[in-house]
Length: 134
Ligand code: ZN
Image (cartoon, rainbow, N blue to C red):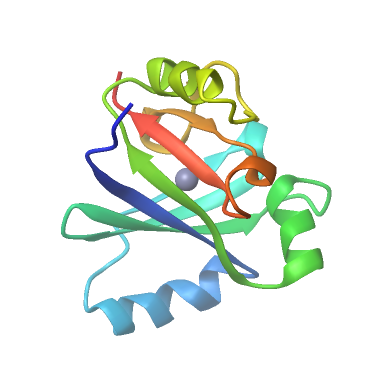
């Protein structure tokens, strides 16, 4: 399950409309994709920085995961995503090490990636995502 690189960093924002121009200026690059993930109740915007992406997350529902995060903690870093060869295998390997999982099996995330989250209670407070193309 050894990750190959940091695939993306997820940042919760109140408004994509406000934060996209800020990040475009800061990073000197344009947002290349905006996508709504209905089952996660978020709208995402992506920036490419070398091998790594920045994923801005705007809530579409105050009861959704990002809506609740924003209410509790405000804007900021939400999760860290590692690229792995196979998300299902990486989740399974993590579980065998005694790490609690949010997702037992991979599901479809932004950019049609297979994604799965580890539970922050067993990862020293960081919400960790695995993602892979297969
Ligand atoms: Zn993510």
